[in-house]
Length: 294
Image 1 (cartoon, rainbow, N blue to C red):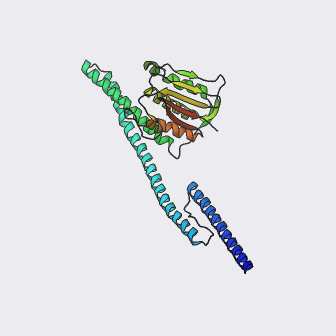
Image 2: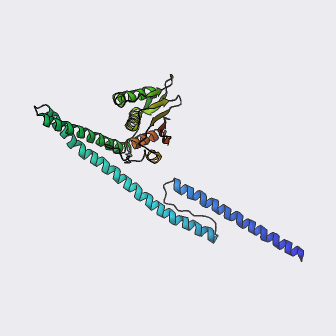
């Protein structure tokens, strides 16, 4: 009698063990299939070999969520494409009349005018310049995010590119009373990069740093291709710095800005295989870039 009971218990335990193994196998199968569906653009749903009712219901429940996720992703991608097309069209539509306005301003400034008219023309010229800058940012964003945009790789001396970018802002840096601290290695840092993209990245980051700096700016380039831009910015906080790379995001006191400058810098950096991040610590903003190149 006891022998039968022991044999029965052994069979039950063996069956339960087999059942557990099959369930674990099905769970791994669902896990792998779910990961594949998230990482690849496919309409295929999860299908498992197990006949277990609970595991098949779990797979079907995940499939329902995958259908919802797929529809939402398609709507997002369509909306993103439409937004980029709208930005491109708006940029093109506004650049032509804006160019004409600037041309007529040149003609007016060549004429004899009263002091009052000259003052008004100066205001119009300043506002036109701001509008031109905004249009250029919109146009640049539309170009670099377009599927047809291709990088033109060549050997780039990162040291020289960084020096040139800083030189362009020299007058503004001195006007703001900033004494920059620049540290670069004696050895040239050369990477296969897109020269135009590198210049745009540096210009956008330096321009942002100068705009919010409390009076300091430290730029460090390492032999490994890492660049750090650091400055104290009492007008910013950790939340604002965390959103600096969000497109169209501007802080409250950021006038004359589309909020696209750092978003463009992030897009270009990642397209060249690099990385970019920002942090805010004890009143200081640090933007770190690593240029990998090809």
